[in-house]
Image (cartoon, rainbow, N blue to C red; front, side, top):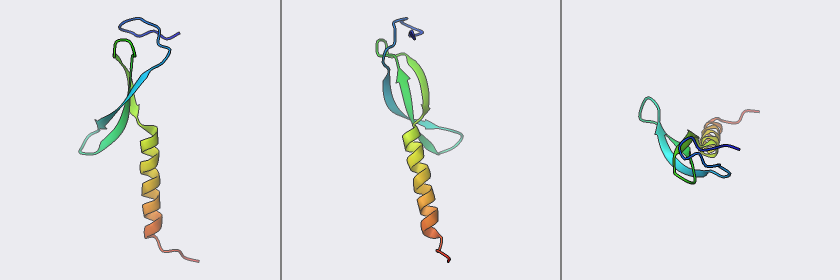
Length: 71
């Protein structure tokens, strides 16, 4: 079983919260923070995979829409 590094209680579930991250410039990314449900200690942060997927799909759709269809 995984224990919280701060309160040392067993973690059987995790709290997730959407946050904003930045990386070398003005671009903002949607991220997820994982915290202990007992003491709210930050366990991990990662880019939100669903938001990233949607951004990629939107970009591809925009590029396809801008390209004329050639047969």
